[in-house]
Length: 246
Image (cartoon, rainbow, N blue to C red; front, top):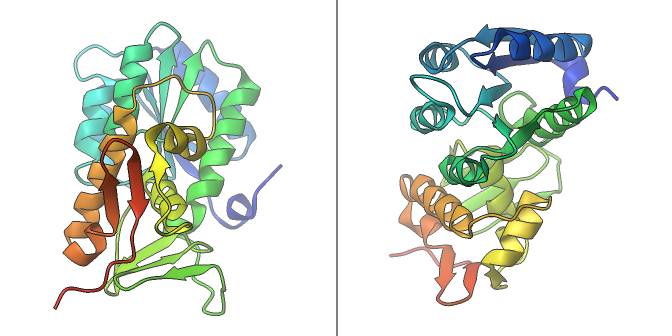
């Protein structure tokens, strides 16, 4: 089913894979959904395209000669929060874990079915569509306001002291999940299960890495905001509405 975002916006997707057969297959699936598809056959080309233009989503092969998917993701995350879904073989679980730690938003296991690809793409687009393109409804009621952070869930927009923070979809989901229950402590296992939303037997460091990256982005504007995500040693994390420092 076509989403409102897809009806109002030309969706542009970058497909990265060193196998022409895979790129051609993905292009066929995606173009049936009326998406605009751009291809890259290696990591270097992908990184150049991804940094020079804006995409709604990047489908990124994990294992490529030269610059692999993890290296592309690492470089990309230093400059952009573009949603990324990694394409990976079943036997690459350790690499998938590393992918989550570096900031991927999802992964699609090869060999994949057309239906799964489209469903995962649409799910990511739904979660991220309003971050850059939809205007904020000033009458929206789905807003969390704290001393240093404001989270407009209808627009998927986070502002710290009036300045918007560019978060990846997973960083946003993690922040919103914690902030929706202030002062409640969540274990790493609980966060991994609820924020990642599907069965994933991964390293709990995935959660720690995302929390670390989220804090860094908030702290870059205000330490008051970064301090709101509190570590509860031996258990997990909580969102604490600390007062602004004098």
